[in-house]
Image 1 (tube, rainbow, N blue to C red):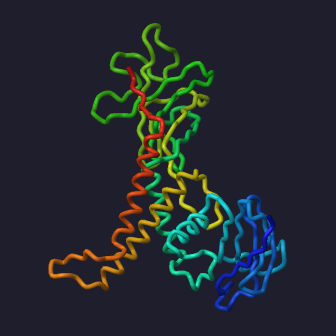
Image 2: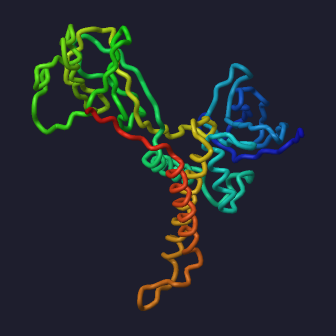
Image 3: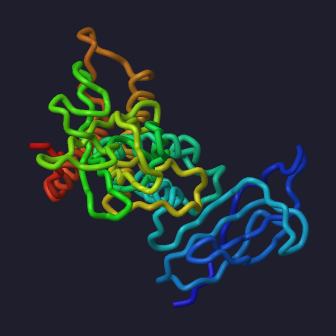
Length: 319
């Protein structure tokens, strides 16, 4: 059903110290589309209430499409879109702080909730990193190669010859002493060998990651061979409200619950500072004391459920 809704936002100073004289409403998702330009701090938008949409308001100057944009003032999400604005709206509703109010009347500042969301995403990356892979082309004689910026730790490192007929997994370097030259302790050639031994097999060599670089302990003899790294990766922190994140719905649920815990802890700490304390230094009647505890239990339960549903990841062991 097509509906019309009024969006309102606070007046901002842009580009200097004077109040902005024009705001632009843009639909950012599913496709970017200019909606309207207004000279006031409110605008009516029409959309299908069943559609997943993201609208963003920024102060602007000029005429469309030659607009100069200022910082985002408001991002409104209809239905479900994996972005920071949606998570914040979800958290606000759970806290009884409606997101469709003018920002000056809401209880929770955006930047505070955004900081809690960032902390929750960092924790999510530690608990449930994203499974990713990348391929690096080896350079003759070079032993160090940069890894992706979202790299957390390696699952496996596989050498692949240019003909594709040789696939060998490297072992993580144990740093317990021993040889580190181009041949193994039994004399078998490592991957940098020109020819394979007549008997036995290649000794796969080692790798280690240091300062966002993958290091190998052999000298590649060809610039056509590759290394495939399967790794646990970090989700990036959002830089804007309308940025669509590569999050699954369980990710959104965990981030929302953890953000709510941070919010309630802040409320409880504020209450404790102004409350009276008994002689035993106890506060058994703190009305909000159980809110963070109960939501933490929900969060812990969601984490356990998700861990039980994950496939078991086993590290490769050379035999």
